[in-house]
Amino acid sequence: MKKILLLFLFLFISTTVLAQEPEANQIDRSHRFLDQRSSFNLQGFRARGAIGPKVGVALFNLDELNDVLAEGDIALDEFNNQMLVLGGSILGGFREGPRFGILTMNGEQIVSGDEDKTARLEVGYAGLISEYGLYAGNRSDISLGALIGGGNINLEIRHKESDDFKSGVNSPQGTTASKNFFVFKPRANLHYKLTPYLALDLNAGYLLTYNSSKQWDIMGTKVDDPTGNLHGSTLAMKLSFGF
Image 1 (cartoon, rainbow, N blue to C red):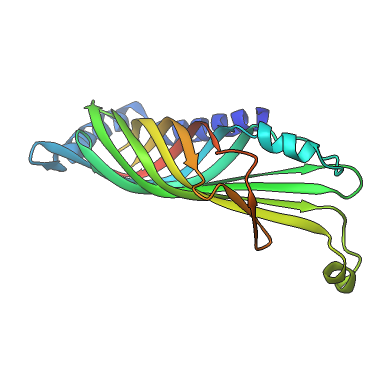
Image 2 (image 1 turned 90 degrees about the horizontal axis):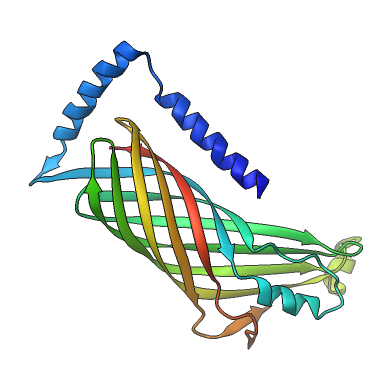
């Protein structure tokens, strides 16, 4: 968790430093900023478009998965419910009005156990963003919306290391499992302009997933899913390049 907080702090400080300018230049920049804002008026709305990387933390419910893994004899450490997620998004529309875009996020964790045992959990999702700008000030705006899409979970468990290729293919070394799901995530977003073409976005949401098959795929074999649907709160920061 400390690493995640330090990452957020570093990104915030970096963008703040980029936005700082001498006072005389800042006044002139502000006038140009207002002129650029007025140039994007479309039928009473102010247009906005941006693209950029995102970093965030997801508070997933991994307790049921940890309980299942604890029932075996592989003696692995538990997966943390807090997962660092990275990705990006592109968005276009109006500051006070509808906006649409695309988002993708991905995170992973690796835990170890006795001897050479390890487990790797990867969660990824992507989809279409639809949101509506409720308020737009001089440099900031607030919007509400949702993400609709799909994703998957991949679980890899290694029971022992392979000495060579022959032993690796002739003697099972581990297990791989995966499942797909639908995604729906309501979210709120705060957008703040640092310069005319650089902004910082903070958004919070709640990820809901649904595995329609209610099954895991273990190396091509379908088995019942005892772990339930993934869900949890998300908090992310985006460095936006655009207008």
